[in-house]
Length: 598
Ligand code: ADP
Ligand code: ASP
Ligand code: MG
Image 1 (cartoon, rainbow, N blue to C red):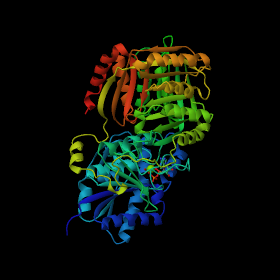
Image 2: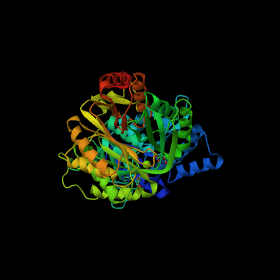
Image 3: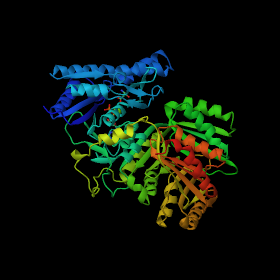
Image 4: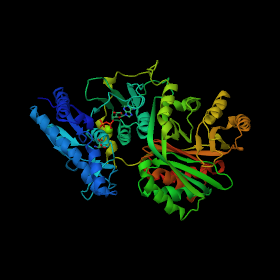
């Protein structure tokens, strides 16, 4: 008998193993795949809402359970499922062996409840597979150097699945869940959302970290880094599902998806001394508490003082405020305000980088829906706005509609293969890349300097719906391409501060347009600078690695370089500094990331 040549990983989420019938149905899917000639590794989550129940139990004992004991507790959920799944397969007359993360040898760091995978040994799994077993791996868990059980963060079973697919050189990683694929936005929030046939890694990475809970964002970091094709499909039907890979669905669409992060908290540091190193004091203290800071909006200062706003998951507000308090002892700021009732709405699309007018369409749709924009931040492939939580769903619906996401694209991207034919991983290639590296280690592809742009800042923009729309409509009407946009929340009753960058040759024209508008809408003064330098650090998973922005701030602060604007995405962090300091900043950043530059 010839050995099977292909291996697939099938992951079943909580609802897909919620009761014994569903477990048996999942078992049959795995057996079918084995009978088709594949070796099969299953990754399973805790049954139904078990993880939530366990978290609730801990909460009945204490408000602040230790993270180590949380991991000990939560890992039991998956242990129950793997055992039952193995029994199910055996009862159907096939061989199966269940393994915990520790038994597989999934080594992680020691950041309990948010651990990162360092390495995975394949030897035991391969031996069991070669002996004809279906291997059933507990999702979401691993073990640190001292044999403590760790977990990877909520939704982390996806990451286990993609990581196993990477190390085993699987031809595919199938994610079976309670929806039949990836949608243009969460179909439970907007029923008009549309299933997409395919979506690129970059887009899914952004969407996942911006709120599309269908995939754990770190699983997509793995998939991109190790070229694992992912196939998201329903555990209840044989519908075709969606492929996450290197291709986009359509070249013609500027936006491919929208996402909502409902529970965000905003923190604003008011009157921060506008000198190098101040942000560092705050963000480094937040990073040591392992909170990922999300939208960081730092705007050009006025009278020697700047305001910095950022968002964090609202359940991490307390720990973040502690860090802010500690930093305030070193850096005096005028005031700190926070709002725990905000939501972030984002649109994502790879094609956005080449098109004008995307931002203004989004802002117009929000204005027409009477939604006030509190903060704006953009990157090459996404635009995010912060809005009041009560306006969040309305805002999501408005942007979904304006980009016609409910309609299938008229033109598909050239060279799109049928969904079934997603290219396999090349195992040799992956094994090569895995040699001697931490699997989830930060990798930086590039540090770049763009000295071709100028900046415009509007001092005070009235805090009412429609202002951003008007500004960017006028700028777009003049045919000017806008790159970075940053609108900060100032907390001042007289409005927000709005900065953006444009190609230097269009700066004068842009300033004219903006001055005219500012005068008619009673905005504050308009300032501009023809000499700015935009520095970009690009790689994978830059936001989930809390230290990236810190490293940048530190390197620049040490060289006495002040940061004027900043924006972040999963694949890039951009900062704007004075044009004269561009070359120096580039050299400092290259040195700061030398150890992780590929
Ligand atoms: P599982 O337990 O299988 O991991 P999850 O609940 O983690 O399932 O993920 C599936 C859910 O993700 C869906 O039920 C859906 O409500 C939600 N979701 C959020 N954004 C999207 C999206 N863009 N496409 C599809 N589902 C989404
Ligand atoms: N059971 C874990 C959770 O609910 C992991 C997962 O399902 O992916 O977050
Ligand atoms: Mg999930």
